Length: 475
Image 1 (cartoon, rainbow, N blue to C red):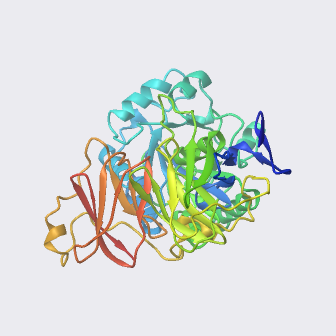
Image 2: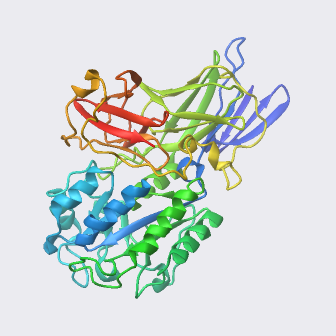
């Protein structure tokens, strides 16, 4: 065997047959003794679930209507948003903590909402972190009046600095698959009376555009027409337009990924920095998913969506002690895994090596998005988190579990829009899922910021994380 490693391209000559492959999507397993281990590819989805585009809904100024109206609307469709708060405007801190507890992102919009927030980059972050508890603290900032402050201070405190319309600064209003050229100037299109996006069709047209381009669109909303908006009185938006946009997104969830701005940013940065090294031995496939971009702002442990060539009909996918939800479709096994969280082992029928002679490339829009583990349930159904109390009729095994309270690790559990029981911020914690009869249907261990832990039949379930418990309904 001859192995020439030249930068990012590996060329292998085995028995006079040559493969040339991009290092980012595969590793080369050498022949040891008489056992030949073939090279395989592991593709990382451009967006979560191998969707074709991404969209983030962001809300500025901490309006009362964000808690009373936006929160329930997003809960109805199972999506999460980013809420940017002004410290000195005394937002409803307990209400926004409740949104954080449901998995939304709370972010900074300065202390004072002056013309330029220079000098408030670090202090607004610290002040909001003193009021709102979420895993990373505050990692996203939106600039008041769209004026960019001290970029160096922004990048020392946040992973995203959001401006307003990119076109106002000679940029595009949407981003491509590789994100913005400058993470301190991430564009978001203004909505409402003074903005470009007023109707449901305006929102859906923008999402269709990024689906076609494999890009990312962000929306900037203040208050809602006819609602209690406090200081968020600029360019009010028809809430029905956003409701219609979320409904459309749910119906097209196989193509569009709706997630908070900070979450999309983590995924994108991880995807660009990660490599997936793959080897096969003894009927198992092992994937090593790693990057080295963690810093004092983020561990960058948001799950990435992967697919690996697979010729069987059943598979078990584990990363360390965690069993990962997976789906087999079209000759691939699909799953979400966390970089730097340990080896990913795929075992079961068909888990042996599959030789390949094609170059591994970034998955394109032609990749079947419905194959992803995140598409196992129909996205046309509405899934939402139930009351945190344990439902009547469950067995004593689950009735005895304590009620949900947020502890120091800020654990969040909910049913997402695809019908997956999902847990956030449970790294290293034991997770158990019970059905309505009190029987254990899944035990696993928390890894990374977010983890899909179960997607079973419709019905009531109880999820126990550490010493906390939630009841929830997969509809």
